[in-house]
Length: 382
Image (cartoon, rainbow, N blue to C red; front, side, top):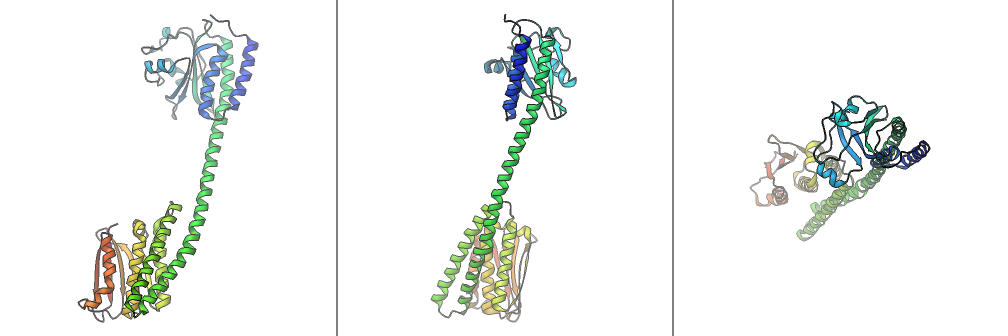
């Protein structure tokens, strides 16, 4: 049997306890320290802190001192707040018992539980509400818990409330700082992505359109073939840059990218050809085609190239919309002179479009006749 703690010693312990709690910034560390200090200042053999659930009706976390991990495993599931432990939940006031099992409100102990007879319990308040309850049992000197023990625990509980509040504020400040750093990184990514999109990609678009214009004016098949290969290289570079931008800007919807790309393509073509171009894009459909945006852009470029080379059109419309069956429909139509699809040479300019559409799991249709204009329709899974 150990000697009872002298009041002067206990007061010194409480001062040290307050300093120890004030030095902790992690909420988990504060909670564990509260139990350890409660056992120390009262001379208890066992201690526990039951952290209450958000609705305050049960225990969601149960921290202990004096019970080994093996003993806890043998006892089984932690208590939920029934019986004596539940008294402080329903009636948050100090509780002292000299014989737990003799109390009619006791529900007894589970198998393999250490013998516990005496009890001192106290709620811990934080920000005006009960945060949890401290439970102490079995003083080391064999005596029952007394007024001095209760006074010491009340002082510690007041210190604990401040420490819990500080730990919560510290963790909230850490979360806020992490969020600020995350936003700063995203802002920098946004700046880089914007520079890439508004600068590099726009320059590549201009190069691609210039090369495409040279293809329309070339009379040498070999030169035209090489120019078209160069256009494909430019498209691949644009696709790679767009994929990089999408990685930099995970929160930016891809429909803005594809929508803007198609409008810029229409403007470039109109400036070079003199054809009035109207572009109409469904943003939701464009977002669903984000992974194939480069292919969609290239199909529109090739279709507009055909209009510029052959149609002698005054107006042209590019639309991306939802089809009746839920597919994405890409349509390019013009009011040019049209052509006879049965003519062998007529199909050569459309073969790339058909190949690209089928490679994406879609279908390709062309509707035209002399003096009737031309409509190209690509249906893609979305």
